[in-house]
Length: 536
Image 1 (cartoon, rainbow, N blue to C red):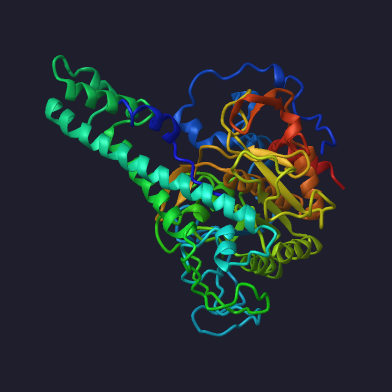
Image 2: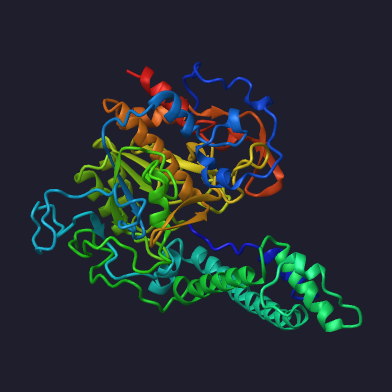
């Protein structure tokens, strides 16, 4: 699901390389005039950029979830009951300064004694479980299919076509990135001599006299073009290019490498009964394994502690389940992680992962059914390819071919961008009138990253935990509500936007926002708490 989309490659390559379910209405919330609200035309302040998902559409003209308003006008210091939220993701930095106080601890297990004290099948699972063991890089699922050589598989031809296209695309990306990076380095040499300094900005370039010096003129043109894409200086641009090149290389060397063997757990991933693998170390293997930590901060970063960010929920414990590698997750790991979460007391599961091939999707659906029967809400990221999920299946899901859902506690979330109006749906976000339930803030989200740092990331991976956080607020304040009721509250209490929006990042494709999800709405914490209080 997390397809690499180089930030500025498409624009740069062409130029620089060659030249230089609706429901109950919440009457307590003033939503009737939302669609006539003025559009925000000024840039977001740094504070708004870091908190926009918590802001209020009516007050701030930013499509946030009214989280701050919910705390000041409804909760007023009421912490409610503790809720356990399982995060199935990459490793989580449970020692992060803004997360260390919200991590779930298995009180039935004695740390470090090598004994399964609680007899749950997992030894020393103090804060959750690491189903990946020492695995980090992995193939994509369709690459595994091709590597198997099973040409009788009905998906084999589709996988081969997709592989050929993706391998060629990323090979081209690598070549282009290398050329662009080299061009910028070459430009640096000429510009540094002219400015007598190695770091420069767009403003510095404007002061360079290039008369009679064609080489310097070309260098300045290259640098201006790149820096005008939004970089503060040439070193920031080179850092971004190098990071992009690293991601592209990982794609080619691991994700798309049919000969690569990433799994190091010693189990058979095609045998669901082969269990007991992995370990209790839920930390990231390296600093760049940041996805799970970022997701966790959105849900539960300690509120009002003077550090970094505030999570959406104020009384949660995060159960860490490391099951998503740098590549596609195995169905077996996800199915077992869901069951672990349910069996060990989680009331909400956040799943910010996904793929379009799933050889054992039935295992995962069975686990989703298991969660539903045990009153656990599963919050699922819709995916980041700008696709209609009613036409293309994305996994995990809770149905087959748009058929009946296996439970009523699975909610799929699309992503919003911080700009109310036609561009409010993130260009990368998947959608679907049948298979996407709600939308929530997901683009440009500031949250926790490993080693007590913070960063901005975007994706439906960020929208799902925003909704999981609101769900945790509801379950904390109204613990008698079932998971199915919480899902319905989230869907019914959102803000129904009537404007047309750009879909899939295609400016020519504009549709009513209501056509992109089952609920027709964007999640709103303030509304949700009001409706939850009215729900029997």
